[in-house]
Image 1 (cartoon, helix red, strand yellow):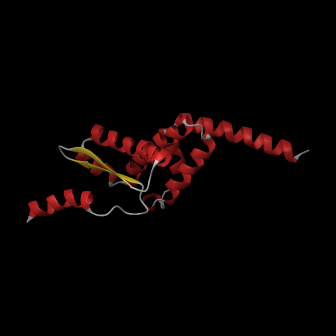
Image 2: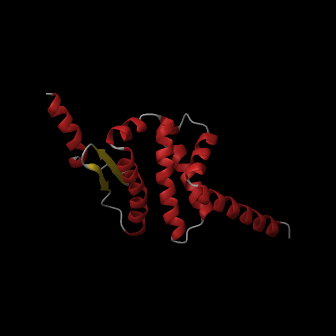
Image 3: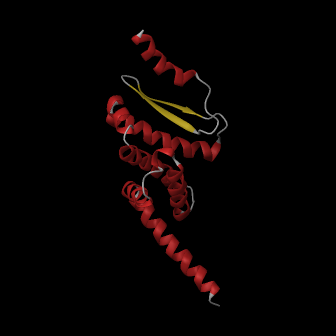
Length: 158
């Protein structure tokens, strides 16, 4: 009975229909390592961006091992660090393709705030975790935001 339950827990996520709202998922299994699934509706840049995010989770799985990866994900602060790292990979991909760092950074902040896991965490905690995982994007975003604000206020004052 126990063995059947364990086997079902490993196999069901691989064969059940993919949730429509989800873009991708990385499952971390003992001995097997990371197994990724992607929404079949994604293509082109959206798929590449999602792959960057999920590849970061796959790297975490390989680095931590399945057991520690599972335990780490059970605690909001550790899960936040893991998600911030994955979103950073996604933002780096976007910026490398010409997107603005300030817009990427703001989008990631919004996505983290909307995740059920992090609703009880303060905005400062979310921002600090993201900035620690993504310092180059954070600096570039702040610089772009300052430049944008200066241009905006320069135009308004005329």
